[in-house]
Length: 200
Image (cartoon, rainbow, N blue to C red; front, side):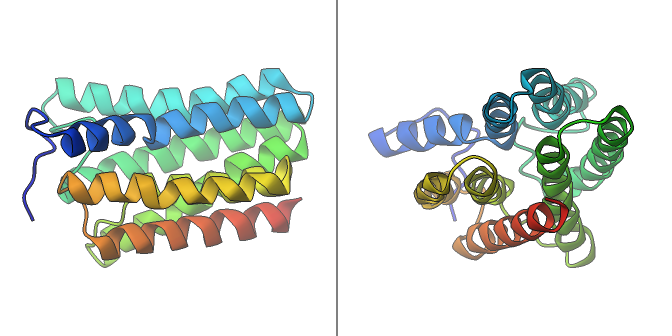
């Protein structure tokens, strides 16, 4: 598979894939979904809180890693660079979840962050134990669509149609195989969905 993720886009398909990959990045989707759920449950402040820990903080970690030459690109395409990042995010997200519980955040916001933590934990197991780089983009897309459908409206299940599109972009850019995209989407949707249902 040809890796064009670090090259300048050459064709219309390359440009489209690059744009979709950026817009469909986990940190972007997490921020948008957090704000949507926060407004939907009447707790926009908690939506901002989750957006910070689910989207802003992960990207800050990645940028710091890039600055220190520990991470090569902002999508963390090299599997050996993912282990420490995922471990750090699990700790930070877990801490944010504790804050939510202690401070009495709405159950929907707690469940949303917990579902993201569960999906991340599954990705961590697959990455660290099986040394296989499942797609975080596909996982986040599927997970968020399912949780939005459960928490806001069943109409959000239609957003699952975006997962194959985002998955295509990751495959086209040479960052993942089809199997890694499919596995990421399934793992994310199941882990997040079951966690949300169990809590709410």
